[in-house]
Image 1 (spheres, rainbow, N blue to C red):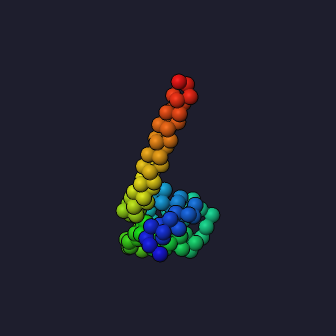
Image 2 (image 1 turned 90 degrees about the horizontal axis):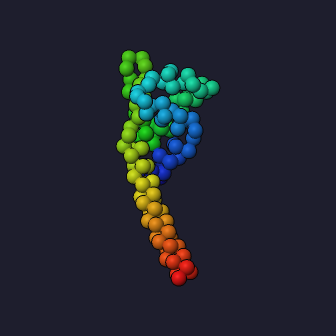
Image 3 (image 1 turned 120 degrees about the horizontal axis):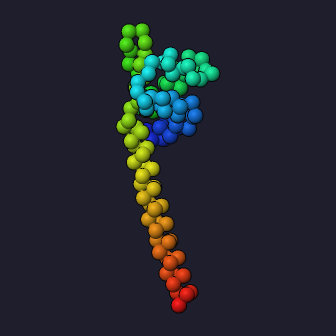
Length: 109
């Protein structure tokens, strides 16, 4: 599976999206990431491993603590992919709008 597919699969889970949202405000230790969820630390660790495989986060060790940091490159790739489709649909809608205006002018003439 290509990395963009892995990223979208990782983003499909609401818990993982909430973790990424938290990490967008700065690095956090795993025990901090567990607090807002009704999930065990082991469950959160599985989500973190999934995010790490998708290259959305990186984990480092600081003493006995594991620190998670958001990796913006993967998020940027998703944004660039979506931006291409936004431009495509924007251009299509613009053409549709122009055709509609021409038709209305023709009908009003």
